[in-house]
Image (cartoon, rainbow, N blue to C red; front, side, top):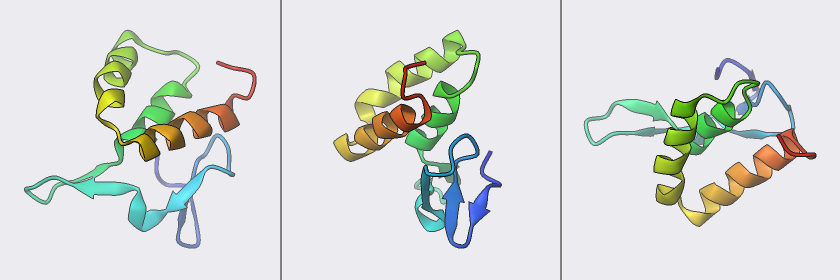
Length: 86
């Protein structure tokens, strides 16, 4: 999923205009375990040709917990990826 990169940037495999600094695409738990930023994971789940029920559950659980900035990033990225809706 996160193999695509260019210089110091992660590049979305579905649309190369969606990108972020490699240093910004992950977070760490309080125990130091790294994980992918939730909005990036939701972008991949939402971009699938098959939206599974568990993906909808993840969206409903995670979306309210995202900051406004991260929700906006996800919305804009999905709009770029699917300008006519999905």
